[in-house]
Image 1: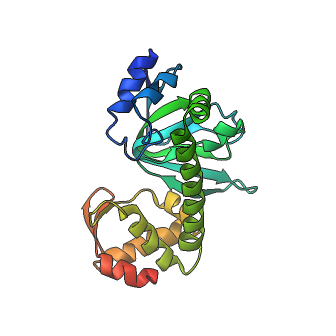
Image 2: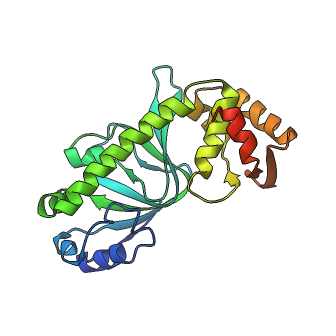
Length: 234
């Protein structure tokens, strides 16, 4: 984990104004006068793959906006196994429960190297109180989280294993405008889909043999979208 503290509030504001994903991020609706309410530093933090943004049960002290990379939200089961309950992509917000003063409900781990902005809870709370635009944005973020959780449950936790793998690949390509997909470890795939690591590996190998996935680099594949949609049931 590498952090670059935005020491002065005005500097943090400038970073937020010029953010490359400003239209997707938590502060997307803020206007120039709203930034005057930011009086605590916002940290820009790079998390290496496998690093935790926070752990389940930690006091919720900040929310995180994902600027680049991919973050997984993990729940650990009683038998010691893990289940990945959601993926966060650029523009998504992690740790919204902190705004309510609650402990974190998941462990958030960088699945790929992730650049994030750590926003202190007090900053979000003050902005929400001072500007209706921030309050509305928070409500949209809560709704987005519920919608993502519902989609995850219905798309990636139901149906046969092949359909689940196909849906996951389609989900990873969603919104990219590309037919290439960067996959990750089969253990993580299994934890996302509720199947064994061996099953995830077998299905990916089968897709490769059938030409549905064509390797372009380490874990990077060109995808036959039509075939994936047929297998997914969609």
